[in-house]
Length: 413
Length: 115
Image: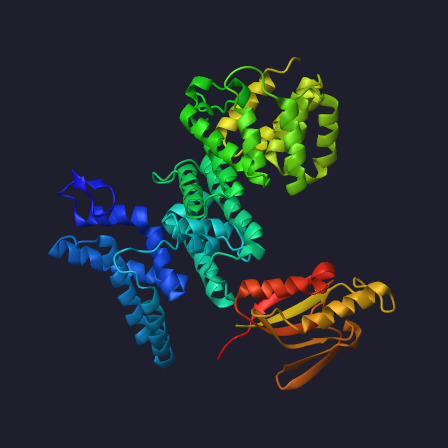
């Protein structure tokens, strides 16, 4: 084994195909970011990279691997893009000259400057639909294929392809700038980025691995990347903490039979304690910055919920949800507050709160599961049974459904 | 880039003329003419008379059809527009958010087609 030209350790006999595959997996985001920053057009960048990869297979197979495959790909993609633009007609030729001139200023030679933060902020722009932000980030920064993203959303591949094209066309057409926002918009735009990361993470929990790509890990990769490119930001650290703490419990979330195990009954020996403590470390750092925000609060809740031994501090969790309401006054946060209040012993007020948000929550499965649980605890067996039936019928994950079926069966007659 | 900003609001949603709120709002509209230094230049902007004054025209098979009222029956009506030059969408959105109509109605931001 020698140090790879492709990035990681590789076998000396690595084929061009394998090398390219590995390179694209690890560096697609960086290459795309570099290309978009030169070409100012995401579709153009993607087409150019695609062509360069096809060309790499031919050339590397014939002449062996170049000294720096990454730089080679970037150079070739750049030239392909310029060729295409030149072939496009007179005004396009002017554009090519313009791009070359602009490029001379920022040509960094071997060392590809990391423009991924710009790329991420562009993909997560609030002027795009939330689903498109998630899809575009997975495609452009994480390098998932359109087919893989379609699987995540249970969409047909052509439908997802159209969604991605529409999003890229809007970025180009509406003049969404390819840049990291300035201080006047930073807070709001960062929140949008972190929300996309979190949506990718939760999609990982619902969809499971897709073609060997684990979305939870992609989300952690993304937030680590953002944290590395923009260090010392409390909310980024809070988001990283939230993801690590939640993910540290992944092995204990379902039992051998695939049935969902609630936190209180999880086998703590199956938690990833190293990941848990890394998450808590980031949370401590974030809190010390004294710049509160929703991701830090959620991370603090996740941390309190993950006690290794002894009782869970539910009154404090309820207090944190109360604080989260200031940032996110949503029925979902109120639902979580109600559950925490019930756990803290205030069953009556919890049921009142559920009653209050009921009209907004009829289509939300976790609401019915929570109502069922609280009714069961307050001894209202018949009403609990009805709520369990609704929750079971609406469950999207078979492990969840089986957990609820067991709970329903355990109700006293 | 050039952007067209169209202002929509339900009739009666804005402060009534003669109230101090109305005067404050008009002052805000006046200030918008200055754009945002460095990122947004004001090119043009007008307010429209109420939708009751609208007439819609269609020409079908050479025949002109005239109709009393707006093109689309919606709760929120087009009440005015701005044409601006902005460095990017973010700048245009920033300008849009300062238009009083964004508070009591909505503002649609559209890039202008370049020929």
